[in-house]
Length: 98
Image (cartoon, rainbow, N blue to C red; front, side):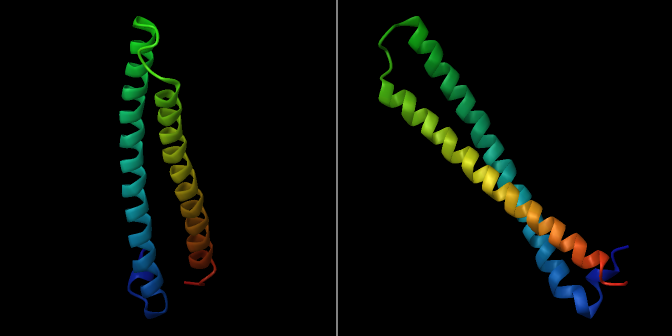
């Protein structure tokens, strides 16, 4: 099943592809952690605003939303690139005739 790791024809592609897949998964997990941290900070800010009116500024609110949009955008872009790479890799290996 994994003979493409040892075949000279596919060795470079398979090792570099494996590195790209594993590193992209690691980066996606790191972004997930940052998004979880963002949720905690954002809801703390909302709770603070509800407890004491005018305790946060609209600039703080929009800055917090912008940080989420940035994280989500990076995650979506990376995910789309990885999906394209995965499908390209699997189609190449499926068409390799062994």
